[in-house]
Length: 419
Image: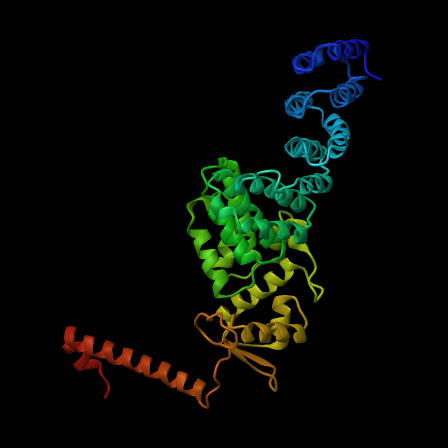
């Protein structure tokens, strides 16, 4: 029940002519903080709104009162009050058909603000989705659409519902190029990066995060955090030439040396083998979806580490047996063979597999990244020709040294050279 002072003010406003009532309600709303109490504030708002709609005030004036009503409600900075009174107000406005679409949109945004403050992101997204953005009776600019859709995307991302978030992101893609607001464009890029990250498109996410980390629109701490996200995504990406290029861009960024992830970034860039302690330390900094289990039962991180160590092994060995490689990677021999075969087939590793002798032969050079390009051609006598080339190189060096001695010390050579 409304407090006595509010009830009295409403009664007095009702006795005034229609053209004077808006000013009376506006004064009541301005004084509401001083005459109301926390126990009655919700009922006071309801009583005011009910009086406004039950009177004979014209639609244009009612719209102005409702806008003032929303501004006063927001000034109380009480999320629960916003939700409770906002839902009641929305029900009252809905009964007026499409007369108060702008005011209903304001109320929806205020209710969403309340849900966001209470960290109820799902409800916030649902309320925002109810805002009419394509109504012929309400003119909505592309910037206003983007503002709402960005909020919906961010709320769905907070609850890891990337599928629904991507639906609204696709709507954003159709109009974002018409919006010049740098903050909205930044939020769009960040949402796009987060969705790519959640979908395990780590290379694309890394590039997007890295671009955002240069934005002057965010603070220095946020730029550093975003750069760290770019590094994490690059490390989790499938090993191969594309990831190597991404790692190269990040390690050349002079800001990277200040990151906690720089140590593991450097080791991966230079194809050094990772030890379990380093991997465990890195895992503690990852988000839950980055530690998710894949279809083969391993985690995203474990798979990335295995593939990296396999690539590192290819730089250390010309060939290695299935069993030895399995020990090196922490896998059984069959799993080590399967992983190697997949990387060769996908063009991320150059080599060949001898299944009879159970040996993997690695070839030097960088893989192309094109599917099917990683198979090394097996040629008869190839190893023997390589041996012959090495012997020839040694013989030529001995000959060069002998000629140099003859030029510099002819007497010594004549006395000691055995023909």
